[in-house]
Length: 368
Image 1 (cartoon, rainbow, N blue to C red):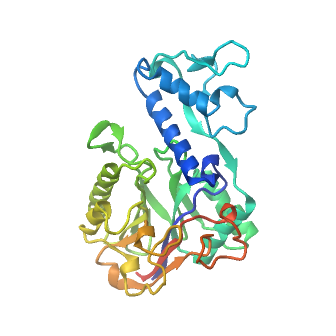
Image 2 (image 1 turned 45 degrees about the horizontal axis):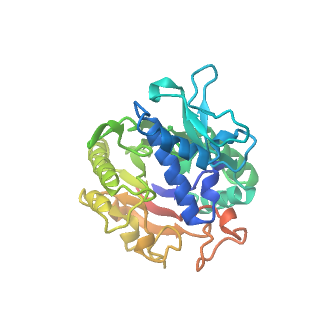
Image 3 (image 1 turned 90 degrees about the vertical axis):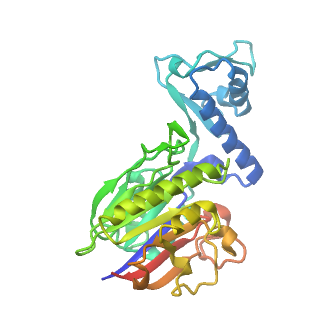
């Protein structure tokens, strides 16, 4: 049975945090770090030692200005009728902030990155990548939710591009507060889904291990099911290689357990680390091999992200077990959705803003 399996970090399909559209990398990184810090501070039992820093972050990013200000990159959402986190001081035109809540239990709400609709050109180009790859089973990374995935499937792939929509789509919301999740599109029935959102960090039993999730998607392929382990490991923004390594170790455990159910197990997705890293070594030690190392891959790029020029740009993987390795017929990398210099791209990709993603789609054809 011929089957094409692919992975693609689509960087959201319709709406994504505004901060990701910032062209200044240093400024973008600062916003994301401040956002992560505020989220972390607000999870504390007591705010006594951190009131000044919480107030500083709220003031710095204009959260106190209310809905009229469109420049804010993140906001504090609160439920009506409950205690509030902060109040601006009553003085006219004052930017001083009073933190009313004394700790996490004293208010109900959360911090959320402000989202904006993606430009149609970017969504269209994302669709072009997916349509050109035309995988039978496609792991999708950085997708908002299942309904978004299904709308993309029917409205963009189906109606706008005139391609055959996937009959099966699935996504389970993960742990990322930005709402970027891992989904799957399939031309074969998805029979079982197992989530690992509740796995805990060995180093911190009170914390979730996976930044997003490591869902196990079981797909019906004739007599032998295919299990795809979807991944989006800890990013290098606000880097934590120890956490990424712990995640990789758990993925290796999940992989070994899945092998007891079927010999066809694929570890796929954005692993956010290079081939010579400890995290990837842990997965290779299980007997998994990445398809870009297969003789069937004859592409000119050794990376999958950014310029794709070298292994320093390699962070997306399709990793196969020994029973699947000799069944690989072809391996490819679809880079035309990327706007980076030195990459031939679609004629509709003109700038970074309308690029499909800064990741390539990686795929392999197998005779299963």
